[in-house]
Figure 1: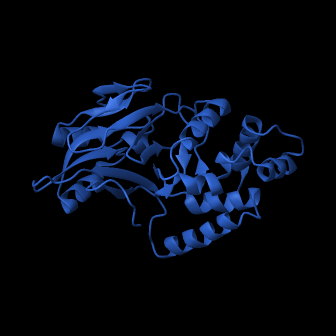
Figure 2: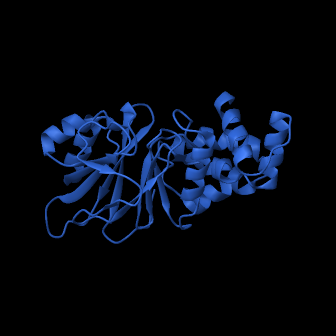
Figure 3: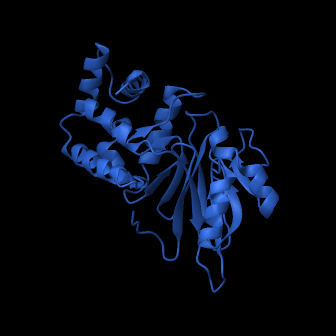
Length: 268
């Protein structure tokens, strides 16, 4: 997928496990043979090492969004090979953590965009996201077409986190950590069956997957128009969620909580 971003900045997707994405945020080469690179959520070191060699990259840091094993499992091996710092949430136990981060922290690495740290709890208690230069690395908080499950936080926390991410600029590119888009959008169609933009996105997503291509990243503007978890104040989303639950719901948080429960039970 072609993505417009700041000059000389590239993001490479590294597929891992069944449906994970590890992200490589790469800066300009500046005349050097290998580009400085931050590794985001390396659950497995093996595909990362292959990608680093293939693209001729120099790892300079690891950025972690949360503590789940499919996001941190490759840290120890990568640090043993490259002796690089590990940035991650201060409120979670992250292997090899050297730079604990909290709301308002900034990461400034040579050759890479400055990244702002946003605390976005809900999926886990200390989950963070990294935002800068129209790029958002959001782990398992916001997915393309959906959002993360509530494993440690509350519906109110996750709703607040999603509202916060939704306030970023329209042209922000969403780099989430899983290839869940098609399933998420099929569920979204049950919530908003008359959303024409959603229907078009489903067809495009099907074609991408049939071709073996990634559906991530997506723009925040597209998410706002097609992701039901960012649309919990839209009358049709509220009404159809009420129809599913069988009782009235207030727009916003109450609808979000019911929608999240619906998705948890959904077997589409």
